[in-house]
Length: 260
Ligand code: ADP
Ligand code: MG
Image 1 (cartoon, rainbow, N blue to C red):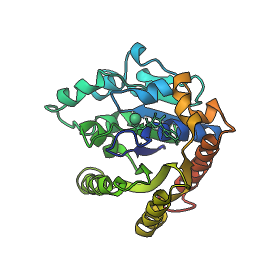
Image 2: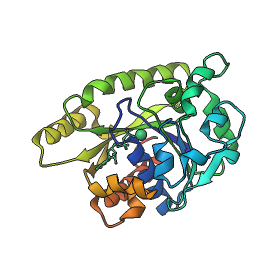
Image 3: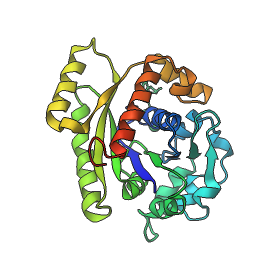
Image 4: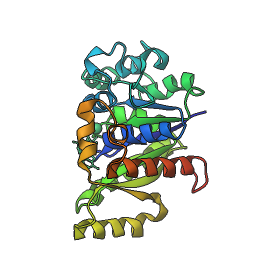
């Protein structure tokens, strides 16, 4: 049975996609069977996994509209070591098309049941909004991984996300919880970042992952080569940090650190 995690934060450019593809590659390297679901119409996780978003047929859009199964829509990431259900601009239309249908927030949940035994971990890359797409992700997840930059306004957005998670927990999916906050694009030379990092620790305790992902240009370069940074330059500081994070996640999933 797979454990399902959303990588979510309603802000754009905070490192969701980078976290998703590198965590997927890291978990694959330590022997886990991983599926990535791209729920962002930008299709960055798809392209960053080496799958051309223009050539998807079917895509996650068809899965949400129940005209294709996950087994039909998944593709192997050529270098990543995991499978991915890709997304492209078509997905933006799903938001509107799903409004009138029943179980509109449970479409992905329903689809994932059929591959429950194919994967140890499913990672869902959410769009930068608290939309029906994100809701589909939250409705099937056991936990949410929240990547955060340690900046002044970062904490503000967090309360909206935490409230949404609470509502989904209460109304749709009682299994859902914030598994952890991941500090990303971290630069220890910047005093403010160190301060915000300390505040996060004080407020969220062990819900803040021990691993910190540094700002590292190799992680930013990797997507244009169609692979996660962890594969593109395994010796880089960013890759090393994501491998460490994959180990930390695996330990949490196995229940050695806290319930997930
Ligand atoms: P999101 O999915 O939340 O919009 P991305 O993962 O696409 O965010 O990251 C936004 C930008 O920051 C991208 O250009 C990405 O390559 C870059 N980036 C993400 N994490 C890092 C990092 N640790 N170091 C350097 N650049 C990063
Ligand atoms: Mg993204």
